Each structure stands twice: as C-alpha cells, then as structure tokens.
Length: 278
Image 1 (spheres, rainbow, N blue to C red):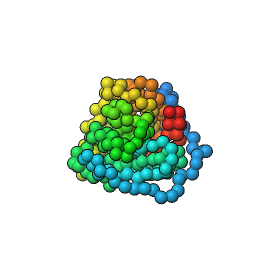
Image 2: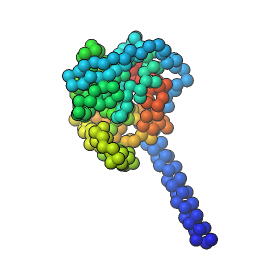
Image 3: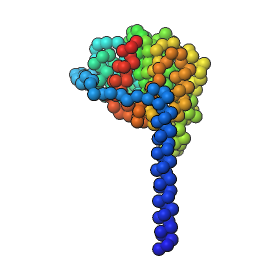
Image 4: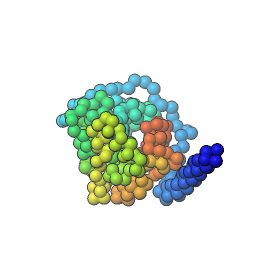
C-alpha cells in the first residue's frame, strides 16, 4: 500500500511539474511573439465563400504536367501553394473565400496530387515549375500565398525570379531543417522508417536558405507564422529581417496550419489585409 502511494505521489509530482513547465513555456512564447506583431485575424465581417463551378485542368511544363484549379474570375491573379504531402484540397476552403477578391489559381506541386512525378523534387525545381506556370498562363505580376513547403516555395520563387511576383505571403516557412523544433523532424524520421518517402527526405535535408539569398527579394513580402508553429520564432524573425522592407506577423494561438489550411476565413483575412495595400 505504501509503495503504491509513493508511486502515485511521484506520478502526481511529475504531472504537476509538466503542467507548470508548459504554462511557463506558453507565457514565454506569448511575450516573445508580442515583439513581432502578434495578431488575431478578425473573421467577423467577411463575404460568404464563392459558389459555382471550379475550373480544373492540367498544363504541360518542361518537366511536369501540373494540375491546377481556378476559383473566381475577377481581381488580381493569386496563386496558392500547398504544403508537403498536400494537394489543391488543402487550400480549397481558402480559395473559395479569396475568389471574392481575386482570380485564384490553386496549383499542385510536382510529385503531389494529380500533378506528375518526374522523379526529382526540390524547392528550386518547384520554383522553376511555378515560374513556367506563370509564363504559360500569361500571369503578370501575380500574388502568391504559400503554406509550409508552399511558403518555402514563395521565398524561393521570390529570390530566384525577383521580377516575377507582385507580392507574396510566406506562411510557416523555415530557412533550414535545423530550425524545426526537435519533435517535428523526429516524427518525420519515424514515418520515413516505416515508409521511405522522398517528400520526407526533402523536409529533413532542405531548404538551404541564407541571408544572401533572401536579400535578393525585392517584391513586397509578408512573413507569417503561428504562435505555436513547428519552427522556432527566431527563424521566422531571421527570414523577415533578411528581406528588405518585409512585414511580419505571428498569428495568436495558431499552430502550423490552423490559420490557413484549416480555416479559409482566416486565410482570406490574412491575404486581403496584405494584398489590398499593394
């Protein structure tokens, strides 16, 4: 009986310590985030999502048959780019809201969704695909909004082809794999042991973005992350501070995708509030 009581007491102490530690960590994160435009996205007064048919098609690029969907038919061209392992479905809700103000192109990256798999994938190759997509579709100075890998794609497009975009929002991007919080790459490595995947390999080895590359970005840039994102806040700040005249925001209470791939209303507000100023 005494032994059981000691075990329960020890377990209780560990649990209380963990809860206290979590509380202290949350307070620390909140205070740090306040230094970098901690915001809440107000979705109380926005239009209803657009209804009607969506145009889906494929376009032949130099290496890839890219699948895409078009939502809406008015306003400035806006390209949405999903994250690793995603598809057009990942940002469909966001596209339906954004179609009120923009002609929205939701593309599927190489090796994803219904786009073809040429065997190789990297952020540089995906950036080249986006450049070719803009050329073939005759998009002039389109806006681009990308989440996670899509956010890295936005950065890569912007420094590789400085004259291509009219502006971009990079959501949840990291500059190098070492800037992930430790739990995330650990989970990816476990998944890779169970089922090897070149998309997982890419997350574990790329990107490799330094200040010199980011300094080449000349179009308007908005660097965004969730308050409880999977990369360290310091990396989001590094990206922001390396891009001249860029804006930064940390979404209060958000995780890696809660404000964009999981909530079309917040994605709409985020895009509208930035792109309407350009």
